[in-house]
Length: 88
Image: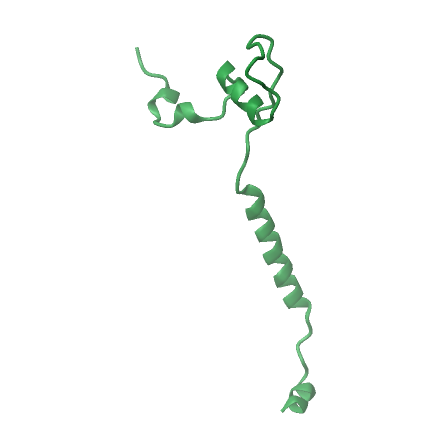
C-alpha cells in the first residue's frame, strides 16, 4: 500500500483546516472573550475560522502606487529650452 501525497510532505498537516477540534474552538472563544471556565464544553457556539492571505494585499498596493508614480512622472511636462535658459 502506498502513502498518500499529503502525508509525504513535512508541513502537509499544518495547512488550513475548515473544521476545528474542540480544544481549538475553546481557545478561539477565550481569545474572543466568549468563554469562561465554568461553561459546558458541549453545545459550543460556532467559531468563524478564516484562511488569511498575508502579504498579498500589500504587494498589490505597492504595485499600484508604483504604477501611479510612473504615470505622474510621464504626465509632467518637461521644461522647454527657454525655461532652461532662464534658470541659468
